[in-house]
Length: 346
Image (cartoon, rainbow, N blue to C red; front, side, top):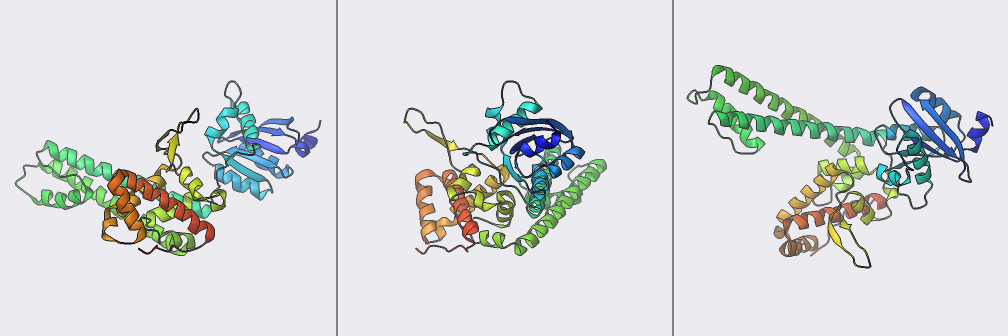
């Protein structure tokens, strides 16, 4: 059979993505294997461009969003699948060919859940968040190093960036603390690096504010109590197409904010939250929930009353997660219906 005939027969194509080597596995409408091929990155473009429109399945991994845009530009229907949902379909030993076959098999399942693809704008916002998160981690490490070094000289600074910012200039100006000239110079350099990281973080946050003002979905999410600039922009960047989620609970489950289940024999067993999905976004939502819980007793609306009563029964941590779960469901409603948040009266 000619290569042209094989291309015409392909109805579903599974591709195991990599950096330079790509394994393909194609089947026809009857599920019979009609294509097994390994291509380089350069050859993959021309091969997919000449392939008649079909369904393509890929794993959600590094570079997957780029390939979704490339394949869809050529007229194909593309689905991304989480790696843990592909693994059960791998037969025997793992290799590129087995992975491509497993992807091809998984993408045909009617009940399969797919990962929503991100647009370039969403990837830009997510990149800003990733860079800011790394800068914050470096600033925290810098502050901890400063505190640790000063402790060896008998100078104690309490935990917290604010204490470090306030204490270092005073320590450098104090001539009676017995610090050597060399260490003062090293300490000044460390402090300058921390100030530089502060300025970099502030610049990134200004860019996020600018993007948030221009994005209607971000403005909708900002109306939810406990959702601020970081949470709103991170949610818009991570969710992608909101229509992928049938309801708010699916979005909350995707973020890992629902209980893990380990039930058998008709006996339900619910554990702690599943912690699936985007750890960064889930953390932001829970921190926002902590803020709501902390000030709930100062308000008398219906939502604040519910939070206050829940905190009295279950404590602050569970209440914060419950608020994060509710905020995720509210966010789904606002994004899917293109509406604004309406607070409930007392």
